[in-house]
Length: 223
Ligand SMILES: NC(=O)c1ccc[n+]([C@@H]2O[C@H](COP(=O)([O-])OP(=O)(O)OC[C@H]3O[C@@H](n4cnc5c(N)ncnc54)[C@H](OP(=O)(O)O)[C@@H]3O)[C@@H](O)[C@H]2O)c1
Image (spheres, rainbow, N blue to C red):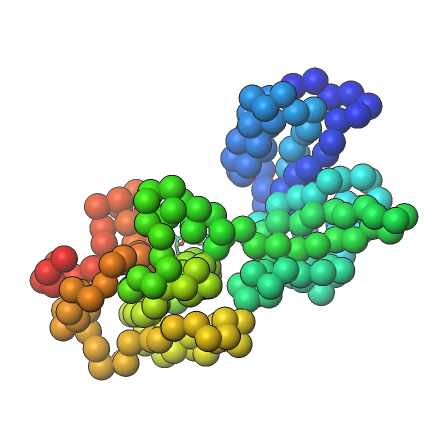
């Protein structure tokens, strides 16, 4: 990678951020695309978020990704937040827009669209389909928003049922007319008839490395 006077700068804001693979991934992509862009780690300690965002604007950055622990902390300092990021309550992408002599910071969240594009690339269009989502954390929030917005009928199940109900309540104002329900607390996965569902999404951390064989689906329930 060669950096010169016209190199466009982007990066990742987080704390800590030295372990992030995002610089390697993005710089490799820029090189493959022949783009004169550079992606740098931007370690920002808690308490320095506002200064860091002012710095992005002042230093001519084109944008940045945001990771733990700042995905929510950046929101009060942004000029605009997209509907997806508002619904998620978290920003993972910042765009620096320079128009008519003003500079504006726009916060977006790409988790939902990323999930949806992967699903469509795999040949599944969620419109009108019945989808069961396991989990009620940040990952589930993005998956449920994506599916419901794409016109799916979404049913949510979580180990702690009240969290599934809370997630549905939190998303409903962002998804007018969506088909979105949490399973009643007394319904266990072992009792559930899966036949009406077209898609099952594991949005829990169960199955992540180093235990990829683990599953939140009970062994005794037919799948
Ligand atoms: N957060 C994001 O924005 C995001 C983005 C992309 C990918 N992801 C991925 O999504 C996955 C979930 O992350 P998260 O951020 O949503 O985590 P999280 O906020 O910690 O939520 C974890 C969810 O999984 C459930 N869960 C945990 N262990 C379980 C078990 N043994 N059996 C059944 N349910 C279990 C939890 O249930 P309880 O409520 O009962 O604890 C909770 O609903 C991870 O693989 C993560 O890498 C997350």
